[in-house]
Image 1: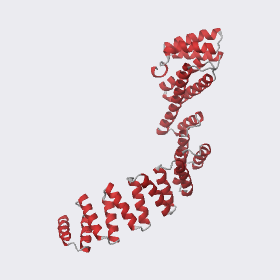
Image 2: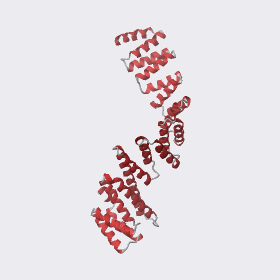
Image 3: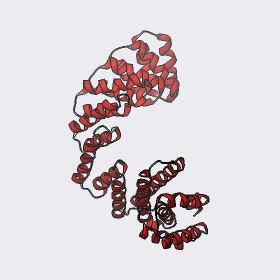
Image 4: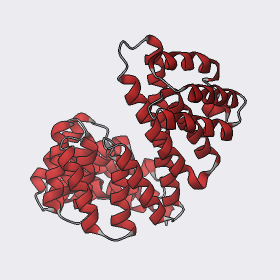
Length: 361
C-alpha cells in the first residue's frame, strides 16, 4: 500500500485546493471529495474509492479523483496477481485521462508539471506491469491469457513494439500460425519502417523460414540505420552464405572484423568461408588470428593440415610446436612437427620429437 498510494498523501489537501480553483463540483460532491480524502489518508481504500467514484459521477474530468482512483487500482493490481492486468489497465486509462485534462489547463504551474511527471511515471508503471504479467503467464504456459495480456499492452501503447513481438512469437511458436505472425510483423513495419530492432526481428523471422532473400533485405535495411551494428553485419553474412554468395558473405564478415578485430565469431566465420572457397592463404591468416586469441585443438589441427597442404613446412614446425605446448598429450601435434622437420631437414627437431612421440605411445 505504502509503495503505491502513500507517497503523495501529504499533498492531498494542496492538490484538492488547486483542483477546486480550476474544476467545479457540486456542494454535495465537494463534501464527498473531502470525505474521500480523509479515507485515503487513513488508508481505507475501499471507502476512498467509493467516494472518488462518486466525485467522478459529478465531474468525470475531476483530476484529483481520476488520480486517486488510478492510484488505488495500481495498488489493487499489486495485491491481486490474478487480476493485475485488469486493474493496471484501469489505472493506465485513468492516468491517461487525468494527464490529458491537466495538460489542457491554462497557464500550467510548476506544481502542475510535477504532477504531470508523476502521473506519466505511474502510467508507464501500469503498462510495464501489464506487460510483465503477460510475460509471466506465457512462461507458465497460459498461452491464451498471455495473448490477451499482450494484446491489451499493444492497444494501450501503440508506440511500443515489444508486445507485438511477443504476439508474433506466440502465433509463430505456440499456435503455429506463421501467417498471422508474418501479418503482425509487416503491419508493424508499415508504421515503423526504420526501427532497427523491428527490422532485425523481421530479418530473423524470414531467416528461420529459410527465405534468405527477404531476410537479407530486412537485415540490410537495418544495417543502413545502424551501420556499425556487428550483429546485423554477421546476419547479412549468414544470408549470403546460405544463398551461396560467398564473396559477399566474406565481405560482410570482413566489415565486422574491421570494426572488431578480436571478434572470434567473425574470424571463425571468415575462416569457414575462405576454406569453402579453397582460399588456403586467407584461411591460414584467419586461423593464425584465431589461435592468437583463443587456442583449441580443433583450430591447431586445421592450421597444421592447411600448412601441410600448401607445403609450408617451416610454418608447420612453428605451429605444430605451439600446438604441442598447448596440449602435450596430442600425438597429432608431434606428428606434424616431425613432418615439418623432415621436409626442412631439421634433424635435431626430428630427434627431439621422435623421442617425445615414443614417450606418448
